[in-house]
Length: 168
Image (cartoon, rainbow, N blue to C red):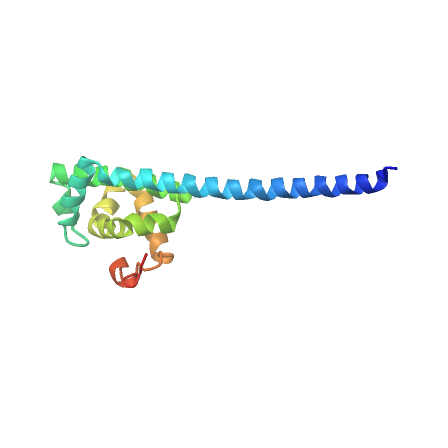
């Protein structure tokens, strides 16, 4: 004779186990998808820095001294254009970090030195531009301030020093 109560109990346990497995599997899959999405987004935004016109802009901006006076940047049409070009690339990154589409530490590891250094050079020019363009380079400044408040590991001394003992 079949013990229906025992089978019912086994069925209930099996159902509960299947539900728990499905939930755990779903959470793991979601986390993996989220990690992949963030990495893809970070790669896409950092790829903006590899565009030839942005690379040229970076090269010219990096030749400026820190806190370059606006009078050194504004009269040079190419340099002003370079600041706007690089600014748009960084503005997008800052906005996406704010929306948590891209992780702050990922951006800091991949391009934090460039973002900080560029801001140090053009800050007075950006602040002057805000007299007529109030939002000029706002996300660039915001991003630098967040990276300074919460730097990625190794940023204080540089990856070449902080991770010199790294082995595969």
